[in-house]
Length: 325
Image (cartoon, rainbow, N blue to C red; front, side, top):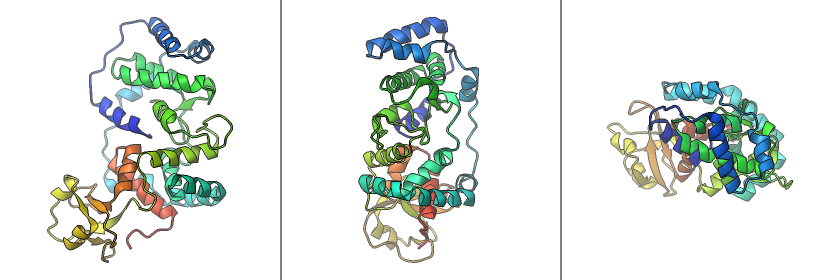
């Protein structure tokens, strides 16, 4: 799930207890409509989007029963970056080369990174969710657990509809409201989605130029640096102080080199003295990575270290980059 919203959701999932809304849904919805009108959303949009909607029990069930994160890092990588996804991603890069190249040039984000995020989020547009976004968000906004957060997302979704980017029935996404082939929450859509095709709509559901450009624009806006990569696997020296990784200590590459950190194949680290961190997603006994500023940009898309490393590893594979060298 893309964006600043992802971090807010993760925080919200751990805060507050589940509380039912004592107000009848119809009365709550009427108040929501009044607020939307005050924000400038047209009555016709509200009629089209809100008429006849009801809370979706399955959405609440999924919200309450999110699985605990129990995969090891290697299990996660095996699941998220299988060879089949690498092969499919390479085929997609070849198929869309003429479109990806100018988008990559314009936003300063490599095509392999754009396609990697597209692949991880929705398996290259194959799995985008099947919930009506407005109804799902209304369910979560009416529910007492994270109502303020989802009420804002619902207002953003209604604004997107009011601006004509998508029809209400076509606004389909995940149970939590993440939309389209890049899984933007409505607030992320409003901040970062792009009308690259020039048809007057920002369509992340079906318009490939908009999908790719929106991914690239997001990363560019949150700090992606076009002259750097995300990071690389490294080999740590015996006796390496694991607290340096746990505490996210930043040092120039030359200092890590002096401490005995090497490329995964044993070679010297790059001579360019970028600020870098060591990440050990599986703890002190697991694999190690040296990551740069662009890793932080991926983390702004999704705050999961596993996700960011998977995106980096997949992007390297799509670019036929041997990151051990």
